[in-house]
Image (cartoon, rainbow, N blue to C red; front, side, top):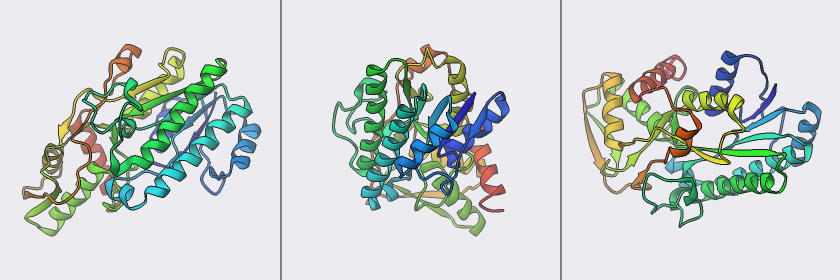
Length: 308
């Protein structure tokens, strides 16, 4: 089987490549930006026709935390919108029969009650701090559904992971999500002997973070179970933690014994965001890593690469 992974050199894409390499029996195409410009529809279509992948895993996109989303709303909307449309429509025109679209739990309404079920997409207003990114992901998800509805021979489906962290993550606080930012901040405090680390808000907001290696494992599972996978399906743990707890567990893993202080003037996003894993469970898959396991592996990666 020949698999094209867009965004193959981002965090999710690299984890998927590693999982597929361990699985064996597949040929992976993971072109870099210099090899394939996802903003150019003609180039994407030509690449699809030339290589004729059996399966496309669309994991490319501009991603980032609250700071990045708030600072660059135009880019987060337009870039993800353009990339999603180009990849999905090029696959359709080239006759690719299977496409797995990687979406985001940011698609769910800001005021929706957790756990967030797949039916809640477009059921309410989005979280303002990442609205542009969420809108782009919603469009790609709906486009996949429309294509399969009108051409059933093309099975285009969407996974909606909860928040992710892990190997190959971005650790610069200006661009990172919560957990890699925490690792970076706590590590710096440990190295510099700082007594305090700042937390945005009061730390009571609840988040669900899954190790990226588990998402890659779900993609490998989908190789043999794609026919039974729902058209749109959450991927998650079925449990969440407060922001304060993520800081505390990270400090435990890193061996830092300082104190946390809260900046109540900073934005915190949704109060709670945990996905409903009913469909995932019925499909027969579940994640393998605990929070401690995932944090240890991620911190080891940080030490080996960022701090090497």
